[in-house]
Image (cartoon, rainbow, N blue to C red; front, side, top):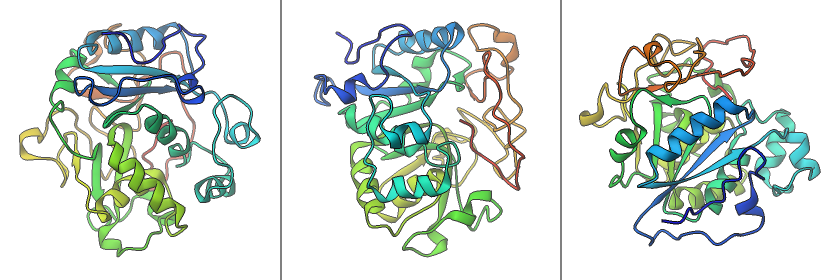
Length: 302
């Protein structure tokens, strides 16, 4: 099948399919899902990691490599070819915050997801890997109809010390507040519409790892954990796909954590991945580790 997205090696404009409205295969084309591979750094090792992902899943997913070196200031000023709605409530919130990397990556990710024009779209950060064949992981979800698949889904009641509750606001009881860890997620077309409409009211604000699962849950959409041991994981996936310590500041120990980092991808050094058929995060392949003082429960890596 012809690729739905252009794939110019290293030099590609990451938002070409969004900016120029290239024709994409619709959701009726065999029910194929799309994927966005997002990175702010691009080198040969990351490219090889993406090539493995794309090659091993080409039967079921069309991937787009999205290279996003731009800062919030770049996007707001109109630098680069990807345009954002500078008048939106969410952009104003991000400007007040000052950084994309502290909870506002939805400004980049969700327009990409919407432009993919599929019922379901995966988002995968460059520092996520799988200790096995990628097809084996994604095939688990080929017939899954959840609007949101994510990791480390948890409620305010079960995890009241999560750092980013401080900025969480929404027109619902705190008992409905839900968080996630989103280096990997899959979202539905329906969730994108509901999410954007909710944010436009100005009643919601905070970290997108709060907003995405909470808005989905409050609006009656279906959310599921990809694996692990939390309250939103179906029994058949319990302790599968990844493990972490959800209430630990670094999510450690486990395979899918905030820190410590690994230095090699699975295709480079399989021996470093001690548990097979598991997602791992983060892998920093010649990438300077994002420095931050870990607060009570810091759980975002960009």
